[in-house]
Image (cartoon, rainbow, N blue to C red; front, side, top):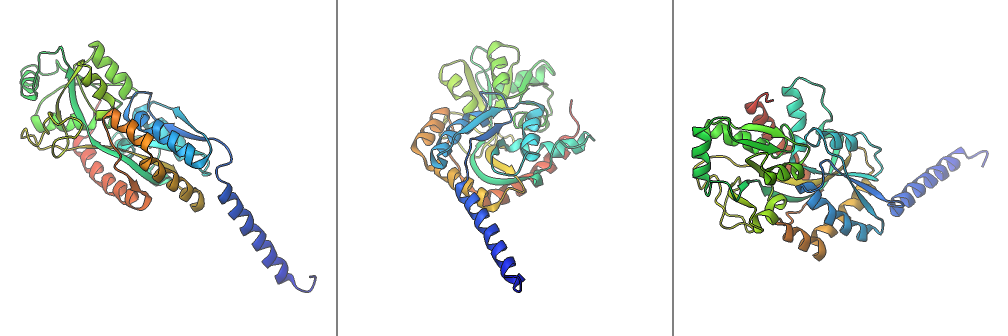
Length: 324
């Protein structure tokens, strides 16, 4: 062995590879934290919990959901982007992920994170947002609502999950398309914003169907229009803005990410668990009951989707400009 140093090198390399392989095969060996960057009750939380439960069964290790609201989701997103790249911290994000770094540019402040700090695992849902008001409001249709908005500039307030978030951007689209002014009231997430609408502190909001379907079904809220292409399967009676002659469209997607440098073998394990969750009857039933459904995309397709959406949202945020 003393005269054959190459043998020691080969053996050392083999031991390193064997150790890496064993580590990948054993992942996960402890609980995983799924950061949901919004308070409970919003779309990311509604999707994240059944997905985490199904993935836990597949991985044979628990996945603990941690709600980390603030800054339109930016605090939780940044936490995962800067966390250890070992697969034990994952992010269940909404489409505001690609908007917030662009908003930081507009506001001329240091970005909380960059999209390239995160690696896509899977997309789970992609729903148009829905314009809702309280059922005891005087507006039975979108036409009645908009007539009031135009006649009373600034008297209608709408809630959101934060500046430039997935509840804010579509309402800015609506304001621009109709040349109207409504007062924006940002909250820490969809859950608090919906509660404020129910309690009468605001008059309207735009959010994913999963956040409001139960309140529509119970008769407490009324959906006036949505930002999709055609009619929604969960709300077939609600027209799209395109049907109503307002040329706007917006989709609120949810997807899972990990820090960009996470090892490929660990990423693959999470991808397989995500795919299992998207096909799991219990998870499918939970999402269907909430008013949404899986629109699964595996990592390669989802990565392309995110890149294209980032370009589109960059143009949209630039058009919206600086907002309070």
